[in-house]
Image 1 (cartoon, one colour):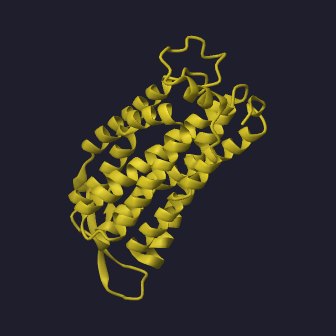
Image 2 (image 1 turned 60 degrees about the horizontal axis):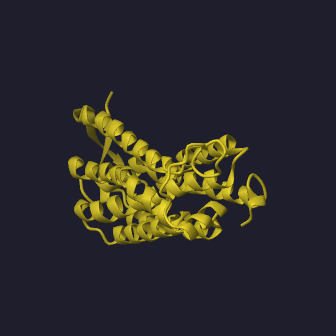
Image 3 (image 1 turned 90 degrees about the vertical axis):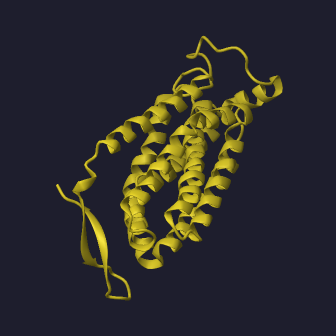
Amino acid sequence: MHRSDIDRGWAWVILGVSFCGSLLTGMHVYSLGIIMAALLDEIDSDLTRVSWVSSMYSASLTLSGPIIGWITNRYGCRVAIFLGGCFHLAGLTGSYFATNASILLVTFSILGGIGMGFCLSTSIVISGYYFKKYRPIASGITVSGSAFGMFVGPPLLRLLIDRYMLRGMFLILGALGANMFVLGMLMRPSPTEKNKSRRGPERKILTTPIKSEIGYQGLPLRSKTSLSLLKMGHFCVTYSVLLHFPVEKLQPYTTYQITSSTKERPRWRLQL
């Protein structure tokens, strides 16, 4: 990768990679409700234990931000997203063999959540390396991938659960997340990452972010850690909302599931 690729050339490939990484993250995060409903049907009917699975997934994704930021800063975006692919693939594959919610806390929530955290952070950071003039536009396109994932994820997961049940959905979801390895292969190290690896860890905080080609939306290199802390704040806000949510409004009801059998199973709905 040459400096001529800034704002042109391979930079547009990186923009597509960032968009796909953000899409994968949005597809997983905003489909947790579909997965939790299937868990209540097939794994554990206790709402409290199942709610911990989704809560720990969001916690692992956000609270791992500072560590992910340090790894990205030290070893580069390609190594970081490779690690994320390993975490996610191991977690979703292990979820196939889970027999209760406690095992899913380790496999799906912790391992899978950390893997998606790597994917989200690297997808946002890498666009800042390759864009200077068009950095605001590139950042907007990158973040819009989460919106596309929000629309595509829930219907896709509902279809997979109806056809392959919950365990089959975990395997397919793990395979989709394994595309992080493909995205990582396309993440060529930028000149900034190459120069930084030759000089060693950066000790001085840059004070002229507008003229630098590193960071996120013109922020200094160390601001990647600030971005990770912002993710932690997002988790705190989400947790505070869930903490005060009236759980007693969730009432079970009985419906027929569209499967080969006609046996009635309890479902859950929100009674307003």
